[in-house]
Image (tube, rainbow, N blue to C red; front, side):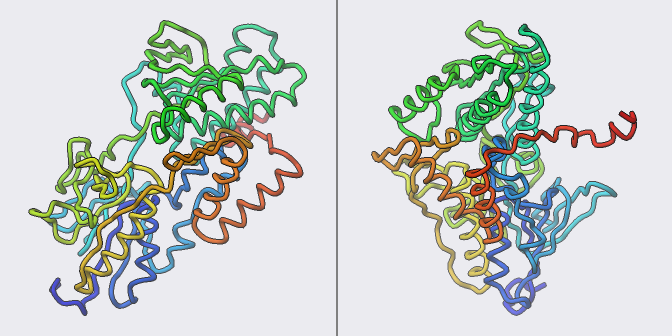
Length: 443
């Protein structure tokens, strides 16, 4: 193919169907004519996860499927390939794809957009891999909710003692946005749930939030962050700052402070780690953290050594933060940036195909907003801080507007309106993890 010929149809491959990947493909469909490019997106999941809704999926405030945006439903011109990219060989313009069934195969391309996202960062803590649940995917959020609901059912038939106390103890490890929001929503659910169990005392459920640094919610400043800690503690939480988990073997949590206790539910939310395919299995340039080196216009490479026909965005890309006054600063890997970078990436790829200049990514933060449970939240924009119910309304309003497609917005709103009149749905479907048990045992 003559790459200098604008009339030749190009094959554009998008690696990853998360925030950045979905918006890249979605916007490219709108910006490119059918005869300009063939679009391919590779992802092992058939949907994009709207991650800001995961804490509310955990609490049952958002139906799990409503936090998932179907790739095939919304990407009508893009070929969606169900599989995991295991190798990116840009020198050959090819990727290796591993499907769930069948042998690996290669897909060739002319232009690549690497938007593979990040994975949950884990540490070699004994017992964590065997006992903890992450909170990066919908399946994990549903499992956390079902585990909590099932624990209340099991605890209600036990006498007071260690077994009952273990079932009613929840531990979140990591005080970033996902950890604090998930922790607050689970607390809110548990407090509402315990009223349905006359066998249990409202003081029995215990909640521990463990953070290795001296503060939680690093995106907000010190005083609002301390207010969040006090707010959680007033609701019965124990917040362990400057503390790490040393062991969690068989659910027995040992903290660096020496404190020990049994926990029936452990949720691990300690941030992001480099995606393995980006970190170890590509010839594209990466930085020390394992993220792809990109220029401000989202082209891979540097000003002196650009990589032709290669782009990246989202959590797997080290995007220069031109809105920051700090030299060498990179954009924070979060949904706010991934969403906007995906949209700009589509514009820049289209512009490049047509011989036009690409634009640099510059985004000034709109502030930080977090839910702390039903009716509670915090918002900060520079020195402006809003707390409590108004901030919670802002959180819901912002995210219902941000979730892609009117179909998803309407479904989410319908669940929220129903909950106003009928309360939370407290049915556990933990048995779906083993759907054949009843059939096999006959019980």
